[in-house]
Image 1 (cartoon, rainbow, N blue to C red):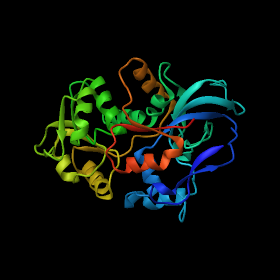
Image 2: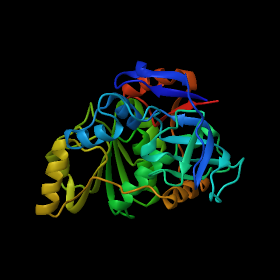
Image 3: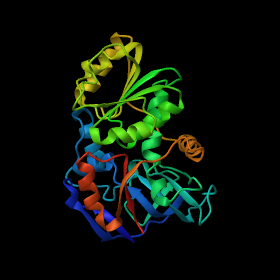
Image 4: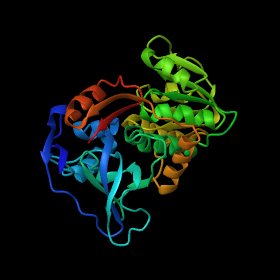
Length: 326
């Protein structure tokens, strides 16, 4: 089968199209023929190997010290069930499915195995009316946003600030927070503000023109997707007992967050917990009820994966970048 192989840590040009062995589903696994995947920020971080110091070493040991041990990246997929491993009974060949691959990655290929003992992988029936390209843009970002907001205690009537609202996590977070009945203030660059209004944001802020941290005690939840602003400036925006949710904490954010949670009444949340089938089912229900939709900036053919990553590295994308595999 064809796959995009990460030959080294570095820029987009390390991603090469190669012929590799087609995987075989083991016990409990499902072999999926991949029709679409995505070029996510997380995939780019793994390819460049840019991680905060506090998690750099364990991730490096897991993914390969000198060169990538996990050579096929890709965390999101939408496709068709090809075959089943022993004991896999939830699906049948021909079923349209989507999901995430977990720490095993592997979605940058014509076929991927998920389920069974593959850590963190989640698979579910696709929303009926969706194209494969649309469905591939849903699982990772939507599930992460859902789990982070649930852990932050999202509820009706709250005031929520979402920093970095225009990416894959953020666009889903805006929609989910509005669905929960919260008032949403969304922060990103000027070119993304109209999109964020269309997604339901009550107020939008261009971070280049306005200091979103100008004020104090205004929010019940701050969901910081990018963690570029100093910890203290953002934390003071919270009301007493507020929750500071960080999706990609830097080392300074991590240690200051631990101290703040131990010594004050602000709860700092770093992780969203493990993805489970129930999370993807909840997302699917919201999509089918037209309460949640993917935002797709660009679609690239499989052979242009490096170009897709090059665009993702600009951090100018609106929502998601989709790769059409077949």
